[in-house]
Length: 293
Image (cartoon, helix red, strand yellow):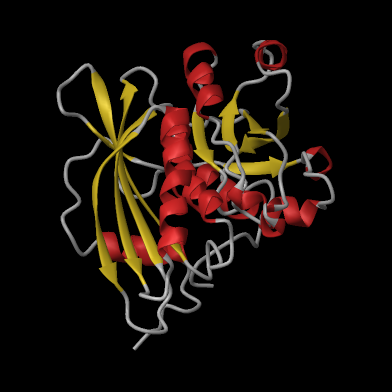
């Protein structure tokens, strides 16, 4: 029997979704959120996410920061679709050795993120895991996006510039607990310079850019000298560390985006790191985070 180890997360997902009905989504498995049309003025966004002790956080980490991260990861996915978060469900599968103080501070951290981005907790579940098992935190959430503002990974065009917000690298040194989801910036983009394709950088440029290019039926050329680096990081870390949660998007050059961005968000970098090219041409990237490699 084939083990999961070495298979790769993308291959596993592709195999699994063929085994079940996948519903009538406008956009289903493979994008940052599922997009559903309920007939209303806006489209519905659906998202699930999980944090596993020993993978996404360690027990002695500040519980408030872990709580912030648990919610902010999902907010970042809503941002990548051009939408906003609304309602959250949280499931805790915890060892009995976890302290009440840790769990309460985890919820305080989540609450801070809910308040910052206008979301609310509406329910969830708690259960115990066997002795020796890691804690698992599962998040499910709904959001909304205006029909004309939704952005998929699949809309990139040949010649589009590839842009990234902020600086990259450093998550392994702790940045992964303190990032700011780019919700405000994404909402501004879709209203003024709507990206042709967009996603958030959760697994690193080396893993996520090939996903976006493939979804858009393109290849990519990358300018490594242009990579915006977090202080103390090199290009390899910027490509491979993951959990930057910056926006990666495509949009044509020469339409005033850089100038307007600098006026609107002077404290946040916007960097052109490459362009989309014909499929089969351009660069290849290896590395980045993959749960089963």
